Image (cartoon, rainbow, N blue to C red):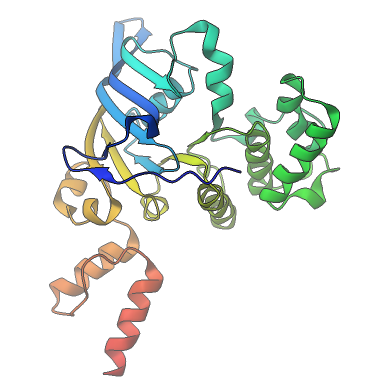
Length: 299
């Protein structure tokens, strides 16, 4: 797999990339309206974002904030009502480029059952490469490497309906990986999973990012965002906040005003500091906080 890493961030604006040829997704003044019996309902308004190759961006917001609509506009499942979205330089409104866009920006959905199409795991993962018309040996190689990347090769002969929810989601991810995408969009992939399944899927997303895949994670679990390079907060169809998680999580009152709760470690650290405990700023993980508390207790 690729090992492309994003370049330095430009100081002229939030996460504006200096090298324009390093941009894989560019969104300019995106607006999207859903039709209803009462007329058009704006789901997105004036959204502008650029994502660098090899980056890991998390998008979070309350229900109805527009985050999943944003994901579908990137994958060209929806097309803008206003503005423009380009993926790898291709405009998502160009119908002649839809297949290339969807191959370049693969998508993992909330419910894995919506993505599984075959009665055998390895056949399901082979479905995309077969549609690309690849040679049989290439398909076999992709199926094996993709299943190995999600630790599911030993289950390749099983029926997907016999797997757990977390295992099904890993198979869905393998099917996307087999297409060799530049970007994987995870649209709330852990929403229907138990804590163990959630952890497995997140570990895979981090591993794929480490191997060079550009990751866009849509989630409503704040704890899932702490390892991202960048955190985008959506509210009422607009970008409300945009920055590194460590910076965003210092803006506690703004987050609460948006109806979002802090990650457990950040919230607990803030509470301890308010009680005079000398907890350093910038702790995002429970393990980091536990280590600090252990050291304080030994003094």
